Length: 346
Image (cartoon, rainbow, N blue to C red; front, side):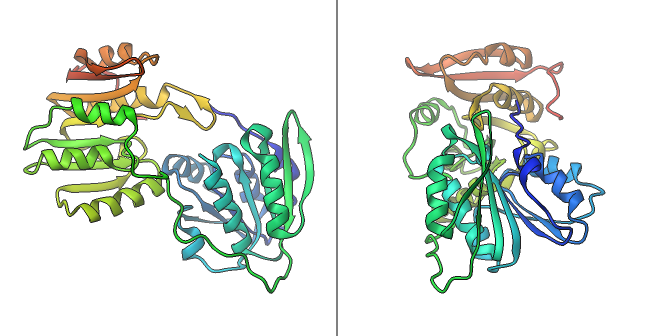
C-alpha cells in the first residue's frame, strides 16, 4: 500500500548547498530528489519508522548529498537551533495531530532565519488547521500549490526576539496508560509458562511484553517495534517496572530477531498504514512468527472481528482456534508452525 505525493518534489526550490531536514516523511518522493539536487549540502532524515528509514537509505546510496539520520521523537531536545535552511513534512506519514504539531515545533526550532518550512497534505489530514498554526508560529504562510484536494503550504523563519515555547518532553506515541479493549482481551487469554522465551511483536507501549515478563519470571521477553518513539517509551516503562528479563529492540517486523527462537509470540498488530486500512502488516507478522517459533511454539493474536487473518494463520500453523472474543474482537491462538510455512524474510 502506498499513496505517494509528488507535490513537494514539484514545488520546493532547492539550492545545491541547502541543509535539508525531513520531518518524519522519508517515504516522500521529495527525499531522493533532494538528495541528488543538494550536491554540497546535507539531508537529515528525522525519521521514526526504522522500516521506512532502511528503504530510504538503500534508495539514497550514491546520492550527492551528505545523508544523516536522527530519531524524530526527541529531535527537538537533542539537536541545536537554527542549523537548517529547508524543512519538509508530508502529513500523510504523521500518525496524529500531536505528531504534526510537534513537527512544526521542530521546524521552527531548527530553521535558520530566512529558512523555509514546506508542508503537503489534504484537508482530511489537517492541512487547513496547520496553515493557521504556521501563521501563528512563523508570522507568515503561503499556499504554493493545490492539486486534487492536496496542497503545499510554506512559512519562512524570520528573525525574532520572542522564541516559541517548547513542549515539556519528547513526543509520545500513546496519550495515556490505559489498555485498549483488544489488548485487555489478549492478556486475559494468553497461557504463559514460567520459563517461556517470548516475543512481543509490534510492542507499542509495551503492555503485552510487560505482562508476559511478569508471568515468565524464569524466562525472557523480547519486545520489538518499528517505531523509535515506541521503543523509547517501552524502554522507559521497562525501567520503571524493575523487571530484568526484558530486551527492547527497534525492528522492521521481526527482522532483528529472525535468528532467535521463541516459545511464545504475542501481538496486537496494526491494521492501518497512514490513512489506509491494510492486512499486510498482520499477515507479515504471522509469517515471521511461524519462522521464529520453536516446533511446539504458539502465537496469540488479537484482531477486530471483521479482519480475516485465519487463512494466513492456517497457511503457517498446524492448529488455529479462537480462544477468546466478543462482538468487536477475537483472540486467535495458532500452534505448531508448519515447516512449509511461507518465509518471514522480506
